[in-house]
Image 1 (cartoon, protein in one colour):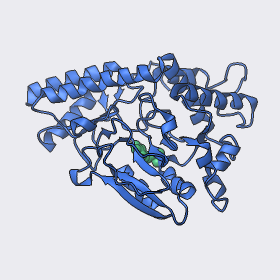
Image 2 (spheres, rainbow, N blue to C red; image 1 turned 90 degrees about the horizontal axis):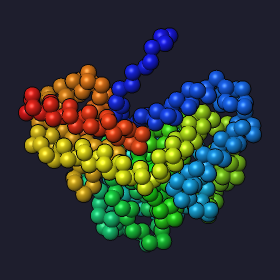
Image 3 (cartoon, helix red, strand yellow; image 1 turned 180 degrees about the horizontal axis):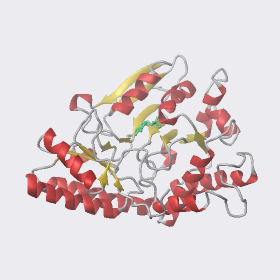
Image 4 (cartoon, rainbow, N blue to C red; image 1 turned 45 degrees about the vertical axis):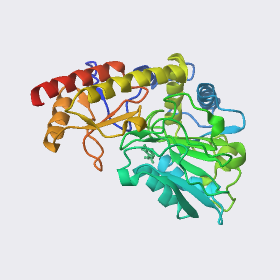
Amino acid sequence: MSSTPTHRVFNFGAGPAVLPEPVLEAAQRDLLALPGVGMSVLEISHRSATFDRILEQAEADLRTLAGVPDDYHVLFLQGGASQQFAMVPMNLLGPDGVADYTLTGKWAKKAASEAAKFGRVNICATTEDEAFTRVPAPDGLRLTPGSAYVHVTSNNTIVGTQWPVMPEVGTTPLVVDASSDLLCRPIDVARHGLIYGGAQKNLGPAGVTLAIVRKDLAQRGPDTLPTTLRYAVAAAHGSRYNTPPVFAIYLCGLVMRWLLDAGGLRAMETRNRRKAGLLYDAIDRSGFYRGTAQPGSRSLMNVTFRLPTEELDRRFGTQAAEAGLAGLKGHRSVGGQRASIYNAFPDAGVATLVEFMAEFERVHG
Ligand SMILES: *Cc1c(COP(=O)(O)O)cnc(C)c1O
């Protein structure tokens, strides 16, 4: 292996995505031996006092960052957000219940079709006839009286839309897939029943799934469920019913610490608005680039746009990659470009992309 310093490109990939450099450096520094432990976090028991501290600190920092109230569990689970698509209805939707789902993109549809395996699903709002280029009006949901929960995808990673505010759902538990925007801005956890997300976009590496669940809801899953698929079991065992993904949890803990050091979620929102604003301004200024998402629904995390022709889209992607701007190719179902600019994505990368866009338009426009 070479000892030359690694040159890091700007990584606009949608996930697994860019991590904060100080986090990677800390993980690298402590990989051979955690200070005072003499072993890597990869080599120690998940029942050791050291790992207890790592997990407890990650949870405590998350509680501070997001203001998680005491009547909520913080759980570190496995199986990704996709497993939550099943765990949510398995635990929360009784055999005679109905769950309301908002359809705002490909992930939301997957969540709804998984739930339909376990009970009745009512589509309470959809923007599919507009190719999911916006989210529904927050007060425009056709809710089922007495439904078990309302499911919302807060940020639609593929098309690049985000709910500007969470919809009003009264006393029905609000269940949110926040895989691609959790901790991008302050959040009122008490308005939610359950918030979940795979870590690999905005929270850490792949392999761990975060769930913040109201304690009474966590108890709802019947004990006939598979043991590892019950929130109540994960909660009772401090996310360690079986061996958890220790390294992924450790790295999430480092990300939480980085977020606190960076000023918390209000500072993150300011930064994210500044980064996204630069890109959307560049799109709106030009007649060359066209934004995919409708302005009122634009995502702070995934900025999607296209060029006048598919040929230009291809060239743009190739030349951008040569210029050190990686991972801009849009999802295969949507095409065009997607700049994923999660919390850890640096300002300098956005500025470089904006310059690249102006130069590309000058040459090809
Ligand atoms: C990436 C993503 C998922 C899928 O996550 P996995 O952890 O791969 O299962 C689900 N929902 C949203 C909004 C996503 O962005």
